[in-house]
Amino acid sequence: MARLRIAYARIAQETNALSPVRTVMADFERTHLFAGAELARNCAKGGEEAPGFLKNAELSGFIKAVGEVDGVEAVPLFSAWAVPNGPLAADCFEALKARLVRELEAAGPIDGLFLVLHGAMNADGVPEPEAVLMAAARAVIGEAPIAVTMDLHANLTRQKIEACDLICAYRTNPHRDHFKVGYRCGQLLIRSLRGEVKPTRAWRTLPLILGGGTTVDFLPTMRPLFKRMKQMEKDPRVLYCSLFMVHLWNDSREVGWSTHVITDNDPALAERLADELADMAWGVKDVMPPEFKSAEAAIATVRKARLARATGTVTLCDASDVVGAGAAGESPHLIKALLGATDLVSYAPIRDAGVIEAVWDQPIGAQVSVEIAGKLDPERNPALAVQGTLLRKEATVPFGRVAVLDLGPVKLVVTEGQPLAMKPAFYKDVGLDPMKADCVVVKSLFPFLLYFLPYHRRAVYVKTSGVTDFDAARDLAFDDDLHPFQQVDAWRPTDRKRREGAAS
Image (cartoon, rainbow, N blue to C red; front, side, top):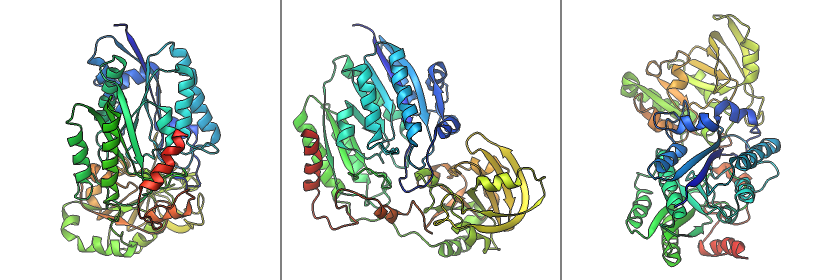
């Protein structure tokens, strides 16, 4: 059998269409941008694919799959990954697309492309930008198959389906299976190229934007669906099952949960199973996420959690300003409430390049008076005047310049870039021990639950007002009525309309 050459790349960003902040190339360069031999080293055994974030992710899994088969060469292109943010600026998207085309052309003849996408990227002036990326790749590689991994919060559309040959989604939430998904998708691509399987696919799209409770895969509401997918895959004819629970702050006109099933040359089976999973997903549509506490109620909860504070800390998820879901990280609302809780020691982050500029030349220990917020999205995040002591300042790669201000009850970490407060290291790296705080604020919706396990004894979700509120998506325009924003009695009419659009 002739040697197979498979190129691999990543272009990943989750977009919040409501954010006023645009994603630019500097955001990728600051967060994660590797290419060629360096990317190959990062993804090899013993490497670190996403330094500071994940040791092994999808591309490492793909490389493992390649290494298990003789006669397959993995051809590294590049990996670009940015923190969730607002839509990609037009020039940023064009630069990424042009690079993908350029590097595929330089790679020479290839037999397949393994591509990591998020599935919920938006770009200025470009409907369905990820489908556009795949189409650009297709123009170079012709009929060679394109295999794609996606986040389970991707928005599956007919354009994405038509642009590639295989799609494999994460199967955990919080996400902890990046490597496994890349490995399985890589295996499937290789088996397809070697003629061992003939993938056939079916999908369903639902007019459902919010449901499933917390949507955590191992909790009671969603566990039966993920369990059923595993049962389906015990049948050797079933190659991969995916459930997409959608990033709801997305400007795609056809947003909704979806299902996707790949079988081995059995389209009827794929159709039946995709339909069954869609019915199961529709069956949990009325289980809403829990109501989040107000800032005042959350602080009262912290005060009552004496044992939790004595043995660790309480994490407060600023659910209205989740940087991990594309918010700017500029909200002052929870900080203002914590400043009034003078009996508690709190750590909190905020993004404010203006404050960094104002304090950067000040000596450590200086008394500073600044206004935080009110710069990127002043209508949602009005300015708040604060006074305190400059404790620390340093330049970092992921967050730009960082300054720590002691505001009395609140130790405030001010960042130049997005304050993705998701891991304890966000605070520990600037000298703040989470174990010494009564509560720490995070800007992550799900992953912090895993990363803070050694530290937090309780997690509290807080709603103030911002672009990651679950009802904020009502401000976006969609083609169809969506549950629970509108009354929708059945999912099949919308699904039929959307999928028949692909057929026509």
